[in-house]
Image (tube, rainbow, N blue to C red; front, side, top):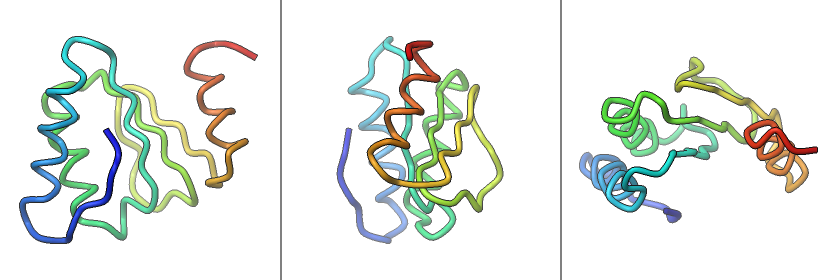
Length: 94
């Protein structure tokens, strides 16, 4: 699930629930950027991790929030190559 959400109090909960529904039983990889700046994003991640603690969290950009998830990958950049490197770590491919 992708998109951006307003900063109101329910946006993160809605996003988290929608991501859970869309994922079904499949593994979840949550890609976030600047979670510490966006309360809705932290809330969505809270919902995901509460329901699915096996969620893999990929933090694009410069991480400021504490690491969360079954596996937490901080890319220290948001360029395409950073996303690709994170995907290779997750899948074990090079």
